[in-house]
Structure formats: structure tokens, C-alpha cells
Image (cartoon, rainbow, N blue to C red; front, side, top):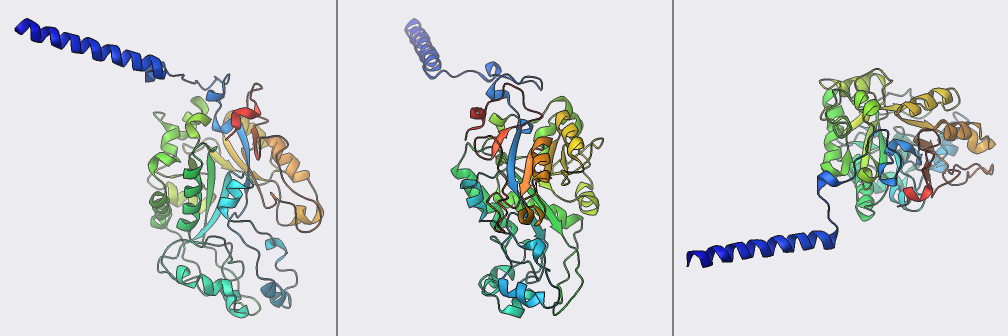
Length: 394
């Protein structure tokens, strides 16, 4: 009897072992230890291409809408041409992702912990702007607000930070193979000088707690596994910079379907965010920091004309760089492509433009990447020569 039981056990063990092996063969599954691993120098296959080895097109002030023409006309009587540099707009974020193929955004964020600070913009009151009326209830609630400047350039496609992030989040979940999306966050709190009939709202100044509250808004929308963070890149290295230079950025294969955040500010706001965490441990956002600092990894360099060679140098060393192909609204009005060409050639991974579509001023100015697919291409500086456009397909 004992022998029979033992035989039965052995028979069952043999059966299930054989079944497991059979399943392994059929499915082609491989243990983690056998999966392909990529060193920082290995660029010979699509699976080892890294996120710093592509170049994508993005938008500047991505949420922004054109100011009301009636407000432009009214204030021109006091300061002619005051709106020339803010006469641009973008479609909603999801449309930029889907139709235009943009993979980098910039959001300007004002703190409004009590709510209502930006619910009655002075310019909107002057013209009885229906946009102001439509969004008043949202703007009266406490929370971070997204707009270009208080009281004059206040029209946005998404009024709150959470609303903007939810739009990106939902599109991302519906397109799980997309290339990583960079979201730049600029913390705004500068007061403005009253002029003409305008009396400006005084922004709430950021402190350490408010900078960390931005992270909290991010985590209210995105799950941890949805975001590439400084901790992910740093890994076991002692600093982010060491990790970037020695180990490299995550591969595109690891980064598809994810987003990453970077603070667009330098100076005081960045220093507040780095308090108690000079290596960005536990933080959601990267910061713009020159090489030589423990938090260096991403660098904002908006002057593609003056800094093109330095951008190229930083990119070749492994850093992520954002630059701009145009400034409102010089290129759009003149058709000058100097800045655009230098930006593209510099190798900056993120090229921000206000004109992913043709300029409305008749100059024909538009920014598209010279090869693709879409608004992404192999990076002209950091990508291996073997890199092919079809490696970037979504």
C-alpha cells in the first residue's frame, strides 16, 4: 500500500513536471536570468535602444489658448502690440498626442491652495469673457491651476494640473506601446505690474511644502509603475549623474507606455524641491541641473542658437536636453528657420515648438522632424548608426 502511494506521488510529480516543460516549450517563455540584458554600450538591437537616443517634438505652453480678440483690441488702446508674443495656441493635449504625435508637454502651474485666486481674471471681467464664466466653478476649487499668466493670458484647454494630467494619463492607457512622454512642470508665482485698466492677482509664492504638493498631484493621477522617476534611473548608483553617465537611461522597451516629469524651473524653485533630497530620492520629477551635481541628468537649454554646440556636447555624454525651435512669435511671423535647424541638429531629445502646425501668420513656418516616423526620429547625435526608423514605431 505504501509503495502504491509513493508510486502515485512520483507519477504525478513526473506528469506535472513534464506538463510544465511542455508549456515552457510551447509558449517560448524564458526565465528572467536568460532574458536579453543591455549594457550602456550595447546599441546593436532595437531592444537596447535607450530613451536618450531618440529625438521627439513637443509643445511649448502646451495647454495654451489664444487670448480673446476683444481683450487684445481693448488693451491695444493702452499698450499697442501687447499680445504679439502670446498670439499662439495649441489643441487639447490628447489631440496633440494622437493627431500631431507630440511626446513632450509643458504645463505652467500656479498654486491656489484656497481656491478662487484665478476665477475672476481682470481681463476676463473687462470683456465678460464666457470662457471665464464656464470655468468659474472649477477655478474656485482649491488646487493647482494651469495658465500662462494671471488676468490676461488665462485661457487654457485644461484648467487644473490634475485635469491636464488625467487627459495625458487616459490617452496613455489607451495607447500602451507609445514612446515615453516628457511632461515639464513650470512653477509660477511671479507678481506682475498693474497697467492700463488691469489690476493683477498676486500669486501664492511656492515654498518647500507646495513644491512637494506638485508630486502629490502627480501621484493622485498616475500609478507608480506608469512613471519613470529619478529613483528608477539612479538604481543602485550613489547619484543620478553617476547612473546616467555609467549605466545609461532605461531602454525604449522598458519605457514604452510610461511618462516622466521634469521641473522646468531653475534657481529658487528648484532649490526648494531639492531640500532634503539632493539626489532626488523619492521625488517624482527630474530637475534641470548642469553636469557636476548629484541630481544632474536632465538640462533645460532653451537657446538653441547660442548653446547649440554645448547641447550637442551634453547629449553626446548621455544627458537629456530640452530646447526650443522658436520663440513667440518671431519665427512664425518671419519664417526664419535658423533656430529650428540648430535645435534639430543639436541632438536635444525634446524640441519644443508653438508651431507643430503651420503658422497662422502666412510665413509658412512649421516644425516637423526631417525623418520619422511621425514626430520622433533616431537622435542625430546620440543614436547608434544602426538605428532605424521602424525601431520607433508605436
